[in-house]
Length: 357
Ligand code: PEP
Ligand code: MN
Image (cartoon, rainbow, N blue to C red; front, side, top):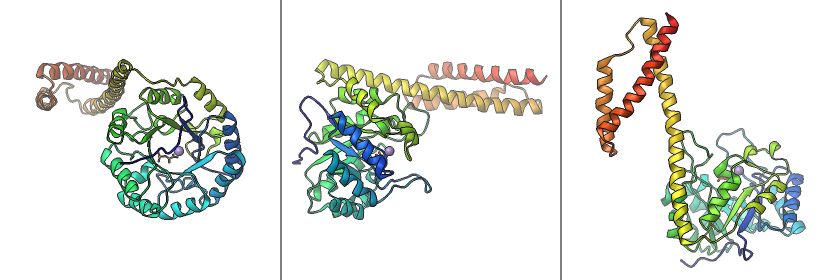
């Protein structure tokens, strides 16, 4: 693959892409762009014009009209612009409006029909394209999207890592699964890798640490959602920050090339972080299990059934030992683990019975 850079970064500094989640009004877009331009560190102004929303009824973007605002951004601030495209007509409209870089969103990367439609529309052009990871942790889809765009003749392609959706409790809106992005980087070493810390975090207070982690892993830059009045944003309000706060974030980032031993350390930190994430999830699940035990306790108390039912307990122990074995967990461990949980359930149920008596 002969791939060029989407953006030539200023030496000593990573690529910086910033702007609102959505273009809402001409005033909001212009104010955001002017404030960002003043920071003097932004390479590309982002803004969603067509917004893929999970459910209808939310703000779905201003559409085509917003492209003329992005044109004005470029004319008046000098910032180059980028927006999301999901179908052929988006591509044609952007090309006509002189948008500098296109990006394919996470909800589009999952769908080969849509990616192919975008690729066909791009054929014969040489606009740079950034491709976000698919929503689900399937590297094949991300890889496939790169291949489709490359086959269309696009030679400047980059990747945006925006995390993966996850069913269950997590600290992140979209869990990063850094190892998947690292693997993508191994498969396509020439493609620049940008972290979208906004969509990974889903909130403001962790934006810096996620951006820093990405830089420690040698990413080429970041894409962050910035809004002049984040709390009033029409989409993704919780994760957006003001241009001033974004300026502080850039100031606080440590840019560095990690040494080999630091890379080893990063691996360890990442493994520990994954363990912490699983622990949080396990505790939440045990809590949910206990609520079910409480409901059973109420049921038993109402009908005067004994709290401990030994045949049920035997059955649980037996199936758990079998299941544990499949995951390399010893029968002793499974027994101790279940006994601890079972004891807590019995205590809960006893408390329910005592309360009723
Ligand atoms: C966005 O960048 O505003 C967006 C919709 O992101 P994603 O495709 O990552 O959800
Ligand atoms: Mn967004």
